[in-house]
Image (cartoon, rainbow, N blue to C red; front, side, top):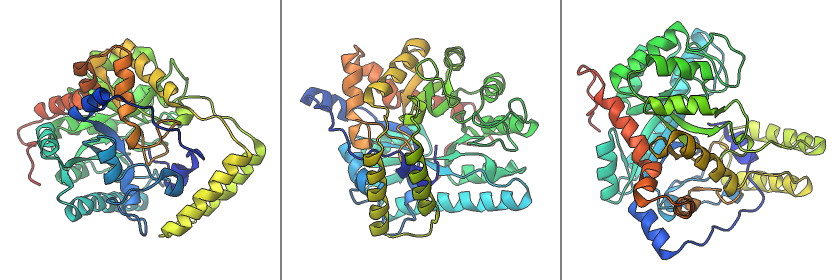
Length: 409
């Protein structure tokens, strides 16, 4: 869930928590798995002046959480790089602006891969991803967060499919022409009539449907209408913390019964209750106004802004979710839905990150924690990528012959 660059940095803590020491055996196990994150908002950083995906960055200095060196350090084989489009004005002009915004963001992902062919490769199918990982590269799936770019024209789904997109979510923070958001007032009571066509077209093309950010009523409609399993690419569980972006146990069981998967995200405000301090809120409002000024700011300017944010955190500290909170969400989801229906997303570069899980370098800690909780290598392999790839495989297997999944790239 991308909040724009403003909120990426806003939820960063002033100090990172040292990674829990792993044994050599735990690290070796982690390295032997296919480690997949289903929601990277990293594409938003690709156009930042001076930012290079091949350089190792520091979350405390520039707010970013994913780059090639840190993927290698964290044993991350690849993931879904999101084409996130903010929910803007609805109507012909807004629809065109959203479409063009998404096309540019997708182009930036392709340019990143083309510029670094020894390190990255686009994947269109699970088998391609596994082959890329075996060859020592990072696989790059494309996803779309928010169906706003489609406007009223679902033929654009095929356009973005041809672009390489293999997972799509209909909404973000606001309702749109496809359906209701979890964080907006109900407009349609679930999917709109066009949203129901969106589900059918996704099934026809073999695109995975992503219900993160969707209202429960939208998930209900997806489960009723979709021939393929549904994924929640970055969500939490209501039983641990009641938030509209989280899923209750009844829906979690229904998701699993339909073959779907929830990918547990690491977003502090969805894991514990936020604390409000008037002075801090006022200071943050000023800081966010500076961030909102936008433009292609230099890395030096970004470092200065992050230092200012750190000073706000120092003067008015507030609790932040931690790694233990993250594991509470994950272990509860496994208990309710089963080991075949849970996976991982840090929601990194989109506002995610908790104490002890600040960027992708901390991912081996999840492997160690699952081992300590009694799960086997086979179980952990499902959580780290097997479950999400299985959903993708099933969605593509159900695609109509007229929409083959074996595209060229």
